[in-house]
Amino acid sequence: DTGVSQDPRHKITKRGQNVTFRCDPISEHNRLYWYRQTLGQGPEFLTYFQNEAQLEKSRLLSDRFSAERPKGSFSTLEIQRTEQGDSAMYLCASSLRLESYNEQFFGPGTRLTVL
Amino acid sequence: QKEVEQNSGPLSVPEGAIASLNCTYSDRGSQSFFWYRQYSGKSPELIMFIYSNGDKEDGRFTAQLNKASQYVSLLIRDSQPSDSATYLCAVALSGGSYIPTFGRGTSLIVHP
Image (cartoon, rainbow over all chains, first blue to last red):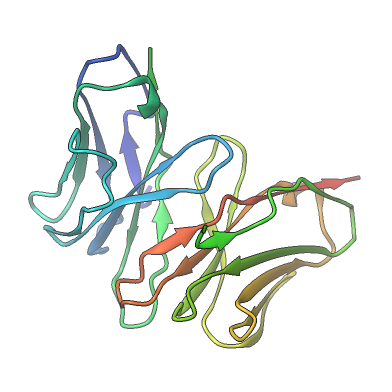
């Protein structure tokens, strides 16, 4: 399977715990995006990387959220001190950066439930 | 003001009919427009993209873009029950980063 993969697919945690999600993009894609999606809403952009550089992080929801892509391949999204409001689907997408085209391919998502 | 607006629906059409889904956006500098399909519990899947005013056809799908009126639409001809899903409109705003902003999606139900 050469698509975008995410791990874990489901995560249940208690409020106050830290969680980390992993995303493996399509191998030749140099851009990687993180989104959050809640019920009845479209995906909400959080951050993105071009290779290992994080080019936009101002839309991370709070300083409890952080993301890394240390070698320009897989990425992790960490949420510290989770709150019930963090319960959502976290989606990763990747794309090949071209001048005027940016088709994003989404992974299956990680569903987070904070108790 | 939301940047990308869609009617949440549901839009219900009979099998074989044309389903028309609409989306408006606020930023006149928007350059790229996408339609994604999302089945319940699944991740979004790109089905159409359009950059220029006018129509773009791909099989049973036609995307229509009118930049002057700031709307983009998706027509699905010969709708099938398997087309039942949420359709997300996404717009890449000006600035060159091509990060799409998504609408909340329109739920489409195609009944036999």
